[in-house]
Image (cartoon, helix red, strand yellow):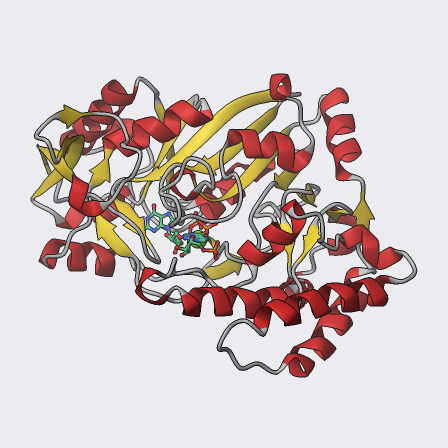
Amino acid sequence: MKVDVLLGLQWGDEGKGKVVDYLAPKYNVVARFQGGPNAGHTLEFDGHKHVLHQIPSGIFRENIKNIIGNGVVLDPVVFKKEIEGLAKFEINLKDNLFISKKTQLILPTHKLLDAAYEKSKGKDKIGSTLKGIGPSYQDKIARNGLRVGDILAPGFEERYRNLVSKHESTLGHYEFEYDLAEAEAPFFEAIEFLREFKLVNSEYLINKSIQSSETILAEGAQGSLLDIDFGSYPYVTSSNTMTAGACTGLGVAPQNIGEVYGIFKAYCTRVGGGPFPTELFDEIGVAVQKEGNEFGATTGRARRCGWLDLPALKYAIMINGVTQLFMMKADVLSILDEIKICTAYKLKDGSITEEMPFQLLDEEVEPVYETLPGWKDDITKVRSMDDMPEELSLYIRYIESATGVPITIVSVGPDRTQTILK
Ligand code: GDP
Ligand code: IMO
Ligand code: MG
């Protein structure tokens, strides 16, 4: 079967973890294709909440192969901690989890470099999660990186030392104090731990699954507006978060991509720095943040909140080839009397555009809004499109008509069961 791709269309945290977990029973394979421990994917079921950073969100479902793809950057220390946190769930991790040998490793010095780079940027800092993502991808592209498969070969420690000495010489150019020795012992312990897992050529695993008619779901991290090429550069992450990233991040040919599920919140959030045209600085923004519990799953930072941005959503749909939309957190908007949607941008010269400008800097873009009525109703127990308040149906139809893509899932709460399927 073809590979279905599920990815975020905004600035991350759209609710990817919840939906992957919800859809996973329909699939034989769930595979992460990019990003690393900067991701925080939340799953809620049976009264428990789990946050996954490195492990694919299909892990709680039985008999599913979960793959960490070659496009991912893996921090062995975070990985070990996450696996240990799952110990009480009796999941057959040793059989169900596969890691590509081509996955890049995040070293302790990558995290130090991340912190040094951010500090040197002063007020222009990206707001990185400081998990070492950028420096690890930097080494990959510069052809210096160490990969998971390298830990199986002799001389790994020597190669590690060589790379670390390059990093230390770079760190010497920054005013930055650090203690590397402290981080190295857990790193090498975690490398030993990693050796116990199935380290594979995952491109073969996935393509054999395609050939044998297995169903495969590719799970994205971050969101399209954080994409290294098409996001609000330089306030982005360091990987291709888009559908094309699933091809390169897993070794899947473009003609083997099936459905593209684009996830978006019924409003917008962003954590970290960077432009956000529809950001709310008033009491509505605060109320949405509170109602949506908009605090980062990885860093705990408050997420900035704003109205749904259609030019940005349509852009993300275009670059990803989205075939179905999933709208998340509709329940959060139940507190509002009326809801605004940004339909276009007014530029500095007075012209109106529905396209994303080259530089999405706040001061150059003024959102043009349409106002829709709110539903002011508790929808957290609604399970069918037919039982929705009319105003919510109107909101959905408005977005479907503006984007030309059907909304096939509406999420009305964080729990697995709080999901409406069309
Ligand atoms: P991800 O990174 O895309 O997986 O999203 P996160 O897990 O970082 O953030 C989404 C947050 O919203 C999590 O706390 C989820 O439990 C929660 N969530 C997901 N869907 C819904 C929903 O429909 N309604 C509400 N209220 N919360 C949701
Ligand atoms: P999930 O998968 C939201 C943001 C950071 C920062 C920028 C660069 O949970 O949706 P990085 O650590 O990659 O150098 O940070 O990207 N960011 C995310 N924001 N959700 C994420 O992942 C994110 N991963 C990175 O806040 O602005
Ligand atoms: Mg998240």
